Image (cartoon, rainbow, N blue to C red):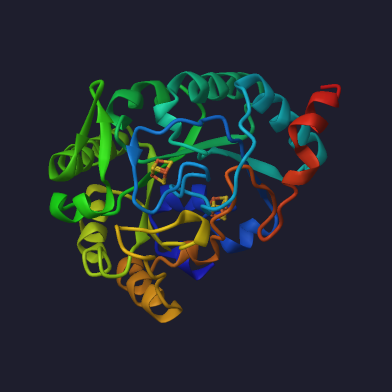
Length: 300
Ligand code: SF4
Ligand code: SF4
């Protein structure tokens, strides 16, 4: 995999057999997400809370929310059925770190009970700084932070509000706090030697030009990968940004920004923005085989 060759040795080894970073590996190693985190502490203009968080997964599909106990049972059931299962992620349907009890209870149990499975988590970053110490205690392989901007003026167009210190904060002030927390959390993870991937949602006319600056800053800090995903405008999401529908980028627009941000790292181009409860190899979703009713009926 040519894209992997350009990484430092220490990171290359971790990435080479990881289904989410190496397209080749994704044909041999399976991944799954468990949806244990329903709440969110911010509002993104491109999100409709009825659907999964687009921190990592495709918005527009609803996942069945599991308790930590059900999630652990599901992981064991899937690992027994799919021997290539190597990575477990928590990505929603809300923000995993806005549900710290549920997310950390799941991680604590999996670290103890399925130590061979790598764990990952994705977050909007608002509460990341206060969660870093706890994250370090688990079998965490990498953390994904969704960073759509580093400029509060642009942020105010993407995030109408955040919930912070028991209050709803709006506008530029809200975006300023979110950006500060994301950058602080990113730095703390890097300082502790945890791999950090940054996701950005490309929103034409809002942050398309700005993402190049985002990319420069997060890579300078030490994020090993910057993954640009297109905004997905589903009709069910209604209107975005107070307009009648925000356009999705064209494939050419997306590729131009991805090229500018990826440099020589094009590892994530195979990412399919899976559901928050996806199960299986690349392009495959066996989630329907492991729904709650089926798992509850299994003897594990
Ligand atoms: Fe891999 Fe992308 Fe799916 Fe995550 S969302 S499991 S990175 S393909
Ligand atoms: Fe929706 Fe995720 Fe944004 Fe929260 S962080 S508002 S769940 S897209």
